[in-house]
Image (cartoon, rainbow, N blue to C red; front, side, top):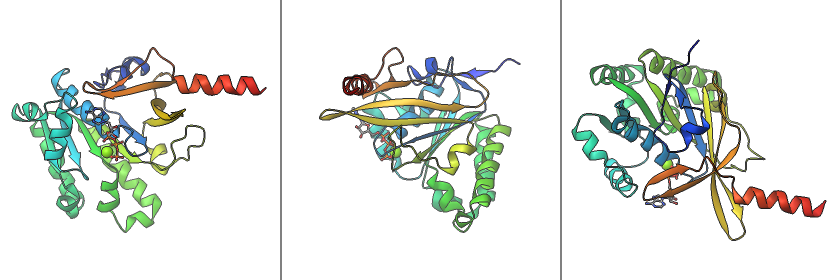
Length: 248
Ligand SMILES: Nc1ncnc2c1ncn2[C@@H]1O[C@H](COP(=O)(O)OP(=O)(O)OP(=O)(O)O)[C@@H](O)[C@H]1O
Ligand SMILES: [Mg+2]
């Protein structure tokens, strides 16, 4: 079977993913605060529309849309331009809007259909915790709701990227969360200490049904946005290994 892949729009990441993400898959990005989760999902939507002609929806639960637009502009993404062209749609405060439960997901599905949406990003999974507060106590039911949402995205022909927060992102001591098992793809953003500063890194932990690299790569965030240096090894890791060798 030939796996149809789409480019994420995040420089370097597509090489690690050996060509991109499987079309219609659901990907979870996880990491500590400030590791670049929001930037990554914004790039997925913005460059998806701009470079690959795939219309997208970005659902923001925590940041105001105007803040996001300004934030994105500093990273080289003119969201407003793509919004004016009807290629991306930013949705704010869905927590309040979607209190109606599944009925309002129907609203999202209508928008997907009407605007020929191919990518949806949700920042963050907190959304589900608000949407199904009681269910939150019942882990299996919560999981069922997340799976149902993923299924609906797949049925609608959408590739879905979302974000979850994590307290510990030390790659050697990572504790897995239920969401990590539910999603088809799981990408970890982290920081590794190198002397007096931290180095940003990324690793693709899993993508069901496709080949990918398991290595840890350095990441940079600057005016050009988030980039994965797919041809480099994190200095911090090299030094850690060297130190271990010295003590042997
Ligand atoms: N214009 C910029 N130039 C350089 N670095 C930037 C720029 N904009 C943001 N950053 C870096 O990106 C980080 C924030 O990225 P982002 O908001 O995507 O993180 P996050 O993982 O979503 O965080 P949170 O969990 O708090 O939502 C900032 O801490 C900052 O270090
Ligand atoms: Mg964020």
